[in-house]
Image 1 (cartoon, rainbow, N blue to C red):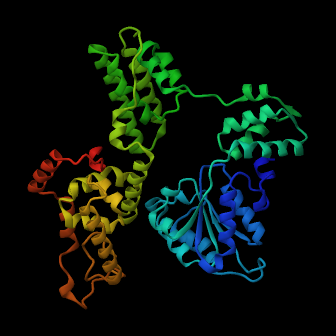
Image 2: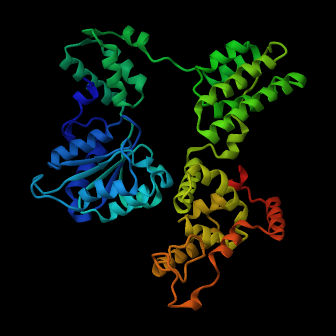
Image 3: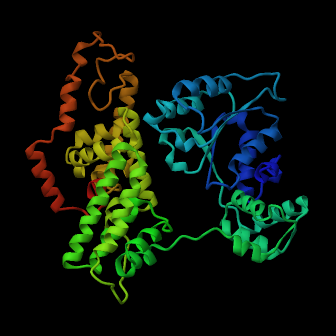
Amino acid sequence: MDWTETYRPSTLSEVRGNDKARDALKEWADTWESHREAVVLHGSPGVGKTSAAHALAADKGWPTIELNASDARTKDVIERVAGEAAKSGTLSQGGSGRRVVIMDEADNIHGNADRGGARAVTSLVKEADQPMLLIANEFYEMSKGLRNACQDIEFRDVGKRSIVPVLRDICRKEGIEFEDAALDQIADMNNGDLRGAIKDLQALTEGRDSIVESDVVTGERDTTQGIFEYLDVVIKEGDAETALKSSYDVDETPDDLINWIEDNVPKDFEGAELARAYDALARADQWLGRVRATQNYSFWKYAGDNMTAGVAAARGSQKGGWTRYGPPSYWSKLGRSKGTRKTRDYIAREIATMNGVSISTARREIMPFLATMTHHCKNRELTVAMAAAYDLDAGHVSFTTGSGEDTNKVQSIVEDAQQLREEDAVEASGGAFAGGRAGQSSGGEESTDDESAVEEPDADEQAALTDVSEEEEASETAADDADDGQTGLSDFM
């Protein structure tokens, strides 16, 4: 029996390490009748979000309806399974006639991939007549509309002082003798993950009736090799076989590892050996391209062979001394910080949802064109239309156009975009950019009530979005020369 299930809290009072979040969750449930809002519990994996949700349901006597990431979460499934439960109560179940809908991994419902699932959930939380409780690891991976429709409660990493008493209680209930230092070590190993600590305790005491500190040290998870140590192996001293085998212990994906090697190899290689190394990296990049095109991750093996063994084999002789290796410069352009990546991914998700494409397609194929066409907001009308279509705030507009989000120009664009969205809502046209806002009914059929309101055919306006004139390109080039120093999408596309 899995101890994480055996010792799952049965009431909120047993939830450890997140007292503030636990109290906020109880208050949400106790006052639900007055606010009738859904709530999102978010935080790192293993900190007790799901346990708290079920403990709350037990405390309130609310039956649960669950929908998690292993289920198909299309618009139809959500409306049929969760929708029916959330919009109708029962007096025969629960003292108050309430039931709670628990949706785990709510941050993994994304536009096209779930065929309308994200919009269905957003609509559902706004209309639900029953309490809805969403669980997410990454709050900002959820769509902006869904976040705004819910209260949010953050569960923080569980501190060592809260993990150790839980491990101590389990040992006593299981009849296991323990050294305090052993439990301290397990807590340290898991760095805030209570669930992981319980799993480690169970694994380390399997078939035993005691645990001491030395058991934990010898049983500690394998540690991965540091990237800087690995760069010494592949660039300075290791042969092809050593470079390949050592790469298995590096905690980097092939897509990231190739950037590390590519950026640092010129610091030690030169001449013919550098040319050979880049040839191997080029072949690795071709294999990575096939992975992206086919989603066949078995090709990663061939990419890894070339970027590790191939580069090591290109070296003419071992390199001595110390070299200052650094993170790939590409990352600084890509916006490697968490906040910047979240901004980029939010915009891509909104584009994917609106246009019916994948998030990857939106990021790689659509966003670069938007960045070019709206560079520094030179085409103001188009920038307003873009912000309105994808519900972008000042930060999103700044990121896409490369302008400063606190400038009056960007702020006025966001205000005009909001007004445009309100007009679209009144007209109920459902148009994507400016096209189709007038003369379209909500069902998508042409309206003849006010023919004068029709400005231009959709096709013409779509052409205007994708066709940048030579004159506009010249003005944008000039704008590039006078860059205001802001980092936006166009800087790394």
